[in-house]
Amino acid sequence: MQKLNNIQHVFFDLDHTLWDFDKNSALTFDFIFKKHKVSTNIKDFLSFYEPINLQYWKLYRDEKVTKDYLRYHRLKDTFDALNFTVQDNLIHQLSDDYITNLSSFNHVFEGTFQLLDYLKTKYTLHIITNGFKEAQNNKLKASKLDHYFETITNSESAGVKKPNPKIFNFALNSAKAETSNSIMIGDNYEADIQGALNIGLDAICFNYHKTELTKDIKVVQNLLDIKDYL
Image (cartoon, rainbow, N blue to C red; front, side, top):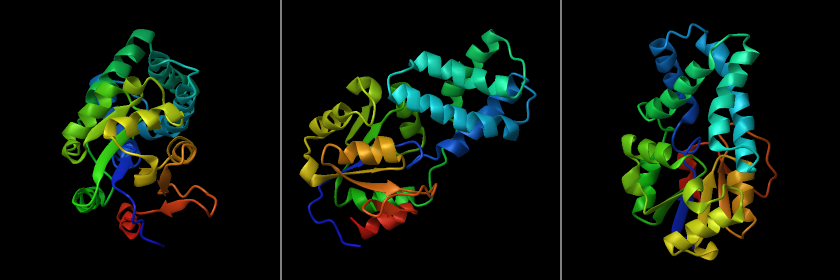
C-alpha cells in the first residue's frame, strides 16, 4: 500500500461512511413507532425496510423518483410487505417525524473522529452527499462533524446526484480543487467510487459491508486504515 503524495483535498460521503446510518435509522424508527403506537416488530420492519430503502435510493439517484415519492413509498412498501395496515395520513406523519428525529441519534463509525483529527492537519476536508440538505446539515451539526469540513455539497444544491459527474465537478469547483490533487472516500461502489473514477478523481472504498470489488480499487474495511494511504 503506497502513500498518496499529491493530495490536498479529501472528499467524504456522509451516510454509511462517517455517519452510521443503519444504527441511527433503527433507533429513529424505534422512537417514532413508540410515539405513534405502531405495534409492528422493529426487527421485522427493518429486515424489509433496509433493502427497500436502498432500492428507492437507487431510483432517486437515477432521477426515476422524487424525494417525496421516496419518503412515502419506502414506508408504504415496507408495511405492505409485512401485511401491516397503516393509514396514509400516518405514513406521511411517520415520514416527516423520521426526518425530524433522525439527527437526534448520532452514532458515527468507529475511528471517525480520530481519522478526521488526523486528516484535518494535513488536508482540506469536504463532504459530497446525495442526502437531503436539511437532514444532512442537521446530522453534521448534531454529531459534531460539521467543523471538520470546508465545503458541503449535497444533491439539492448541485441539482444532480452521485454518480452524475456534475455533482463531483460542482464539489471540486466549490472547493477550488482539481481531480489531480483530490480523492473521494465513500462506501457505495456505484455512487461514490465509480462516480469519482469516471471523472478522473481517485477514490478509496470504505468497504465495511464487504462487497466484492475488483482488485484495482483502493479498499479499507476500517476507517483508520485510510491513514495508510494519506
